[in-house]
Length: 276
Image 1 (cartoon, rainbow, N blue to C red):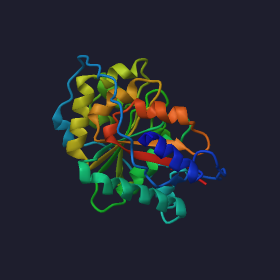
Image 2 (image 1 turned 90 degrees about the vertical axis):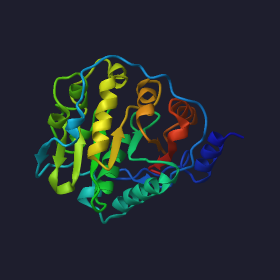
Image 3 (image 1 turned 135 degrees about the horizontal axis):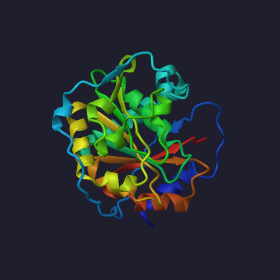
């Protein structure tokens, strides 16, 4: 029996795939990060020439916003002492404790499909990480097809990452620091008709290098893993991957397809979202 099947069978035994009781209010993650399978590799990276991003951006000032109106669903900030806030802190701890095999300072979050709670998990996880002492955290919205981070954090949708990759703005002009929450956000930016091509550019690699120099941890909100090529192109640029699965909704074939779309060697595990 494959390790993938073991993961899915474990989820079923715990009632995470078939049995679900809908929850009112913000989505609650099941913080058990399941051991990942070791199979398959991602599609090859697409490389195209793009404008350069100077490493000097690592120390350049960014926009600072005070009093941003966060979405009520960001309970890691608006109600950090509640049960849901504690679950996101537990998820943070589990990810940090898996650093023994190598660095995970750039974590990509994806899901088999839309509506699995991926973007909400990214924002709350980033806020939970920002609550650690002297940790510089950045949330990056790389879901150009369905961007959500600007809405969750109460920010303008542009400029953002896509504008940096196309050379319209500098990285420091796109980054936003939310002073009271000790977190920075790089929104998705202007909608792009060809996001996969932007992710495969040298500019994308250099942008992440500049972010690595500036922040201790980077949490990337990536598009759904299948059937798009976006996540496979992003995988070589990150340290680790977490897959968000919605209990009772996400099907087994969709989970298999998502795992096949990423580098399983970087897959930290699966978060069972809305587990009963």
